[in-house]
Image (tube, rainbow, N blue to C red; front, top):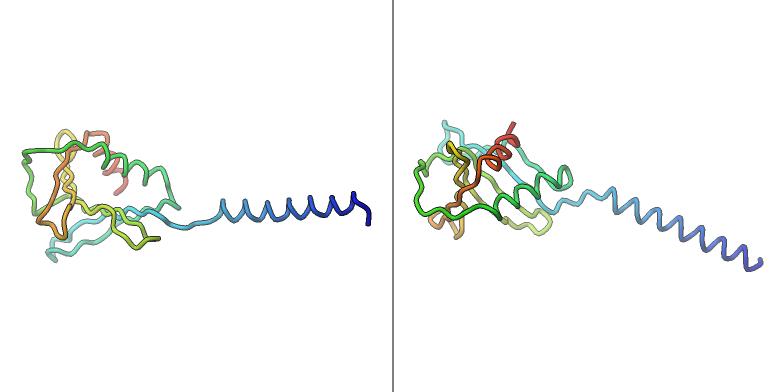
Length: 144
């Protein structure tokens, strides 16, 4: 074998293995974030039925939008909602790390929504924030 054929074999092997590596990276469906949207069934108090689960493998844009909504929400001092009857329950989780990132309740209002984010071990510690109408509409769209 001469040097040209050895070099050709090495180049072909690199192309073959590079193609396999790129294919595995682009088709990998490891879920690192998921958003679960639920409602409370009126017949069973406290039971949350998750009506939709969205993963980053399905739609990274939706996951990013939810994270931006939480990051851009504004703290609220006074709220006029029925704290016992939220419209939605939203969880943001990391299945890969088996960790709950955000546990929240949503109340839709005339000019957006109020989000109650659990900040302690249970729902006794809640931080209330407001979001604008566009963000509230986005959350509503995800439940349809």
